Length: 244
Image (tube, rainbow, N blue to C red; front, side, top):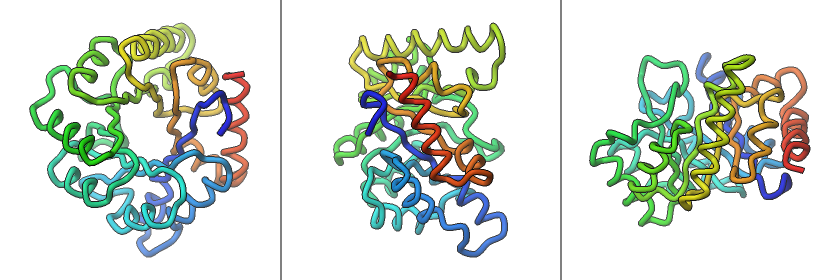
């Protein structure tokens, strides 16, 4: 691992999206995970959605059995998913909001008015030895609420920053910077992800409180043109450069 202990997790969901668009077994997301690890990924992220639009249950079982790096299971905090996670026992679970009508995760968890099951999910997963993270907006109030729920890790949603331009992007980056500093101050391990690409990763990677970046859609798309190993190598280089 390089980039000053900044880990790179590769999300392989959209390999499964391509496979599912036609049915059958190819392209195989588990093969993509192994290629990503060979190219330098520190871990693999995969989202098992309620509607199984990306990963399938068998994909998750195969990932757990066949890869030799940590598996981070993205999931909604529902009884079904908690039971699956407890059975699978991945290294980590990242709890995310989930709506059937969305194309991808559109924002952070609403932890400020979370129902009792979110706290129960954090407790049950943590008690099983699974590292629990909450995918949240870069807002100090939200981070305080995450801390109160007992989650040891937060993943800052970087989508608004990546989608913005000019002064708006600078303002979103300042929100991320302030949130990362606050997370460190209150004892949360801080990750970041969503929408990060070659032109946006540097400022986020440079933040000393950020311990892990999770990047998927952009790298899977770039792999069509350059290959997965080359895309990951370039992302790692940019992370190193920013962190250095």
